[in-house]
Image (cartoon, rainbow, N blue to C red; front, side, top):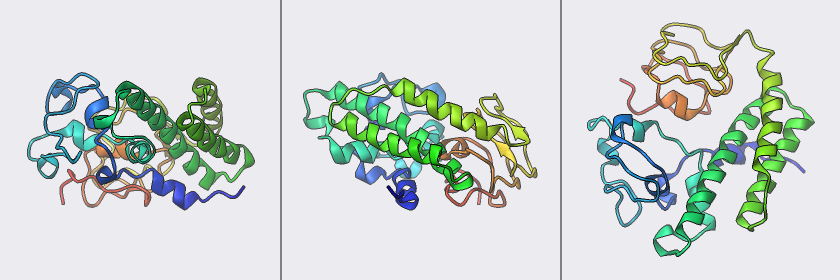
Length: 238
């Protein structure tokens, strides 16, 4: 089976207007992390409108809602919203939220696998991508899946790739790290905590396994070079 990588990449981009506002309901968040309120999982944010859009979306930066600006579901929100009914009109509301969080995990793994597949075009990665899509379908069809076993297989493949790079920062804590002006094209950022890392004028264009949510949490500027598959964060200064 041939893979349509471009189509899969598009599925990883968030499209809030196609979502039932799942992240604003299903997840726990707190004011200390830059969200509007202290909210329990399953409770709608009080800024979520009836049309499932955010009432303050255009003023998140001015309101310093950093948590909202950083968050990225890897497209899980619109995928679940297209396949399942809205939580507003469903009795099994927690089941929808559980599916959303599971699909989000699959989408994050798919994101890493696609990036690795571009660089290392091998059959093992292709099989894992196809398995990812099969697991997704099984979830929507209420077929039991062993997500932990799949996660272990993905982790093993990604670790092999990370070992080939000079600066493997995988899973490291780099909060507030000063990377200003650095060439980070041979850096691996798999699961790295990069909150508030300073990347003004840095070159991240070929950094491996850098995600949108990591980029959103960093402090950069217009001169920061970013991977073409990612979008420049709105909160960065022009």
